[in-house]
Length: 415
Image (cartoon, rainbow, N blue to C red; front, side):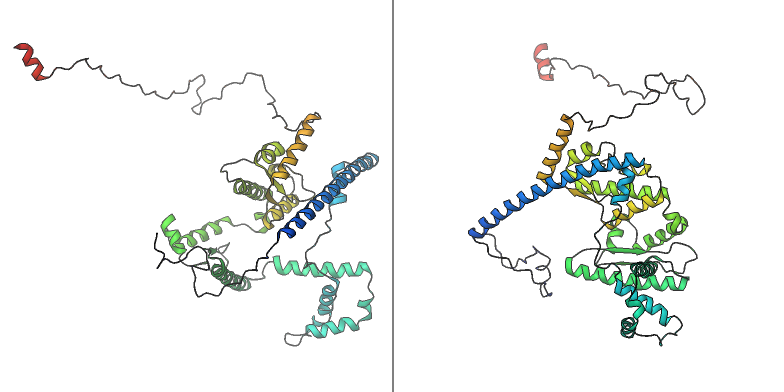
């Protein structure tokens, strides 16, 4: 028996922090065998209903595709263009979407508070009453309501993504925001036990923003132990690097930079979900080389952006749309379940049996089959054979004699 006295339980974050307040977990339900059987029957019924729904949706999509082809042929447009017109608008919104009530409050506030000094502006409660009493605002057309909503959306977007008017305002914004982030990180540390490091620096030599850093617990030691530099030195080098970039928002979001960001986000996500280093994303044979081989799928590719290699995306708007989707998490890698993968492989085999080319062959070189001249060496001399690496020759050791005589044996023979 191993003695257990004096051994502290370190199996969970809560047990490693005795005395700290614990968030109570949800109590588990006691399930009887009858309930399990009933739920199993209900699960089968839901699966049957879902199968019928999927079949109906597939039939609808087939009819829709046929109708789109007819419309595209009739109006002399491509099917892809027509799909962009039909499916370009989503019908799912978050709960923080701008509503009519908020848009009218914003419009009334701009109207009554525009010329009033600070401290003398109307309160929200007063403005709400003004909106109720304004007959014109209560009898607006849908077009006018949409204009007010668009104005409020633009106002919110400016507050979130607009640039600061001067360096003082920018420095205050950075100070207040980083302080909030630091507090959130420390709170997250208390709840989950994470380690974190935050580095913030200015992006131009003329900015008055003070470079700062914050860590949780003893994360500072990581930089010294692993990289051999104090975090203050790392922050200083980070500042020097950032100032040498000398890029504004448009330059940071150039087409080349956006393509690099997309490529890195897709590749890193693929490596993370497959647990394979140096895996290469294959857009040309995506279904066979990625989905069928590794059982993962890239979900949420934005509408209106062609699924292709980022280097083939031709406009900044499309590249930014895809980059933002990858950054926000609406476009992400998903691990397919066993049933999903089997269904996908079955469909793929069906398409193969029907004669469809599922795996596209690699393109041949334009000069395939034609003898090509050897490139001229850097020195400019032609017909010079490259140096071969010297091969190491193994030295053959002299063979040993079959029998080695000792001094005692030699003396006995002489006698």
